Image (cartoon, rainbow, N blue to C red):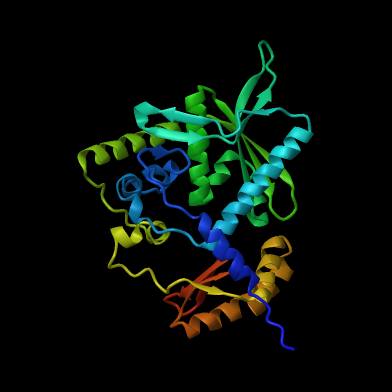
Length: 315
């Protein structure tokens, strides 16, 4: 008797793809505006496309949807843990609307905090789950500047503070691997708020005038943009993304990222096991690597001096 084992991950990802939907966008979403702020390496043109050409946006796949679903599930767990700890979390998913700048959004919730000389107030709170190596790299608000999607978090919470007319907010971060929590206090950054509102105004004007801002000249920004096929259809961004089912390599990468403080261990792991395998894969793909292994995005290419440069990101 032969047993046919189903491809369970494939079946799950196909089911999750049913959740992926594209909706019209006629406003500036607080959660996305950070991607468009020029002073934060954002692209105004993408912000205009989000409003005017939303139906042509490249959509993510079932694997990425699984990551989004996991983040939502982690948020629900943190909400429950906060409540179990006796801390009041109110106005969860409360909607915001700022007509003057055509900005909308919704917040994860507000933490009820005591005050010295008045009644308790609700302090805006955003809950974000993160990979271990990212979690351990963030200790203060400014640390969010290192990555584009984290800069969008900064703008998002800044806008909520402005709409609430408060100068304080809270990030609650969760380590996806260990469940550890971290609290990051946020003081209102008026300059960041000014940049965000200026970007919203510029996008609104372009939408009203049916015009487009200049294109940015940043391969890192453009290569990850969901409108790159519309904006730069003739540009090649390197090797096409492939998906690799390699549990052994995935496990080594996870081990490498979790033990970065152990210099000898990670050096041996990286130099003797991870990089050689990735370099061999790049050689098989004409010298450039662009592959997803589990939640890890591996990109690599040869420098002018001939050394192989590998970059590992968790998405």
